[in-house]
Image (tube, rainbow, N blue to C red):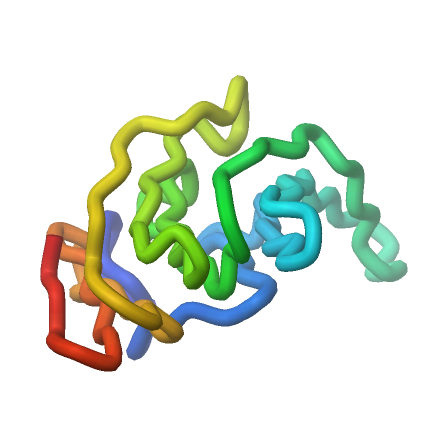
Length: 130
């Protein structure tokens, strides 16, 4: 098990991400420019977990990938069309955009350092660590 505040293994973005503590899932909605945030609840009897949509947050043009930081409350979203990286905070309470940065043309991937101190977003023209 990884220490608190450190990802348990390599990180990479995807269309759906699950938090380190398995309590939150975030999904990109590429066609409508938003992300959906879900809480995940586990039953005592080992039945399948229950997902509850807690928020949908407009983030911009063509959200492509999402990754969740090891704190399980912060996510990073790559916007392919808008050529931006968006930081989303407070996933478990009141999700909100916390920061946004331009990254260059065609960002299609996302990875986090083990502590999520630096997201990395390669583009077709350069590698941008915001």
